[in-house]
Image (cartoon, rainbow, N blue to C red; front, side, top):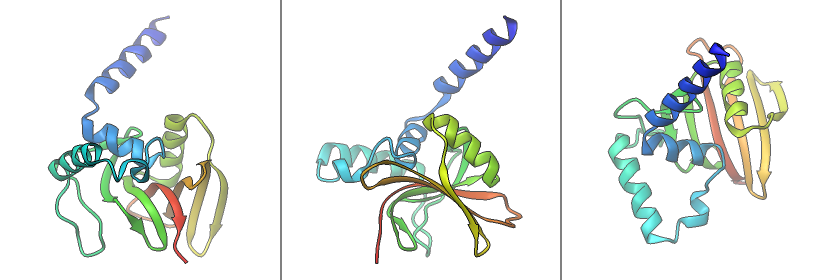
Amino acid sequence: MKTVVLVALASALALQSATPADTMIERLATCQDSWRDWKDDPVQTQKMAEIFNSTFDAPASDGSFAPKQKVHIVGLPVVQVYPESVGMGVGFSVVLEASFDDARAHAEKAVGKALGSCEHGDGMQTCGLEVAKERTITLMAAEHDTKKRTLLGCYYYYAK
């Protein structure tokens, strides 16, 4: 009984400590929201832009943004955000400071579903979960990554 109370208390504290940026970024990276659904809504776009610009530095040469302060999603620290695409994928993704296995466990817990379609090859490991038409949660990391960083994102489609 004592353990259940402690777990409930820890969960409540974690929810209370989530910032608007954490919530927004997590919802976008896990396909709960899609900027494609509201990109033409000036109110929603302005709200997202204000939160994003107050939380992240100007883009790096690779198109990524670094957090100005601590940002956590799915319970893990964010080290980079790619708000439009990575390589050939069009979507919204983050790089988490976590091993592939840890990121997968946290992501699955956050979305309440197991990621499938897992593959190993070309020095990469990936998993994905199609949650709706043109919305696929993707997890990707180098197989021998010493930095323990994993990309988590919601992809709408892949450019050809």
